[in-house]
Image 1 (cartoon, helix red, strand yellow):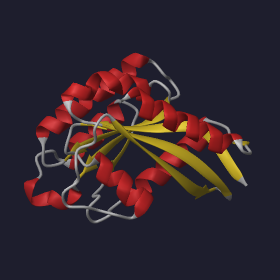
Image 2 (cartoon, helix red, strand yellow):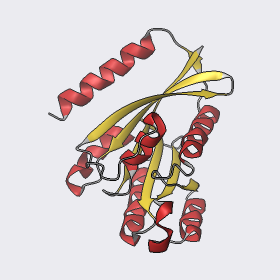
Image 3 (cartoon, rainbow, N blue to C red):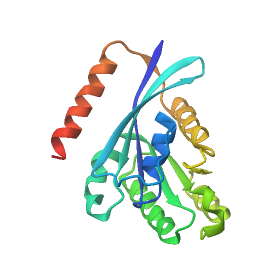
Image 4 (tube, helix red, strand yellow):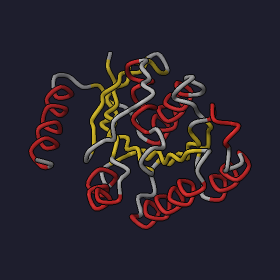
Length: 196
């Protein structure tokens, strides 16, 4: 039976931190060395087996460019989980990640599951942000923290399953029928009509 949490995940962070690569690695098992920048936002759906039930999630991957920043609230306001991503080889992306966290805290959804992701762990030789820095910041802000690499798939599945587990604790599941498919189609239509 499919349990629908009717919850949306949103990925936030600077351009080039690997948000799209993380989602593509998880949803499709793919990685591309040269991933084109997301324009506006991209929409993904994934079904997970969790606690002997099948759970469906919708994932918004937002653009990291500054010019799209004003669009972000329309994705994260309705989200149950926010994944803030930075690149371990870029201090600037970590500073920007902290700004995203502050913005999410200001919007005031106390049930929001927030995750801080240090991506590109495969670039250890170019590391500018120590693991302890990310871990400490996440701890201070009540967030789950994990280091990942979309390139090598390190901790990618663990990241998404951990979010699913945390959401399942915060939000009770309920059985659904055809509404699940229809809701996804409606969201898809809104997405394509509004960014054109």
